Image (cartoon, rainbow, N blue to C red; front, side):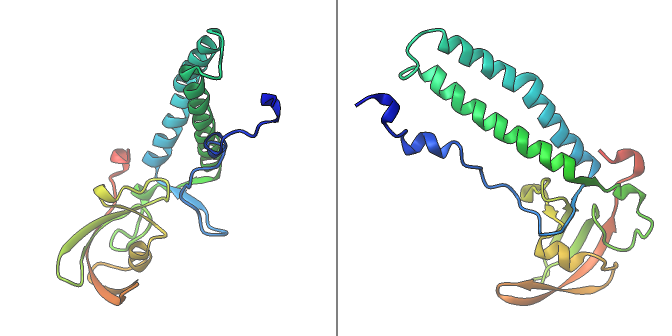
Length: 189
């Protein structure tokens, strides 16, 4: 049978599906810190200016070598090019919708708002520190939680010394806000 009538393998079709990305709640704005915006913008520029042209050169070279059906450099390069293009589209959309929040200008420094670093006592008495950031900036290893996460929602608008309710799958828990910090205006990187 002619190759033109043979269905591509499911492995090749999987590359065209979108990779799961953090989703925004319906109608919510894409809040982001200035540092997070710069990181996303820098990643986009790197993909456009460096990574994509390098892969295009590789694919072009591999295509010039002849038979593409068994050419690993060509097949891998095309797959990588699709991944890069998908990430470029995602970053472009996210940056277009981003609303940069300059938390270093916060006037109510004793109250929790977007961009705050909060020290709180967990129900077991353990001290926890989180920074409330945008959905594209989450890094749990460094205590950076999304503003739409349950702990951030419980903490938002709370003041130092308040006890707030954290809704978890195990039920309600109470956490005590111990300290709230915002970045210094010139240190907001």
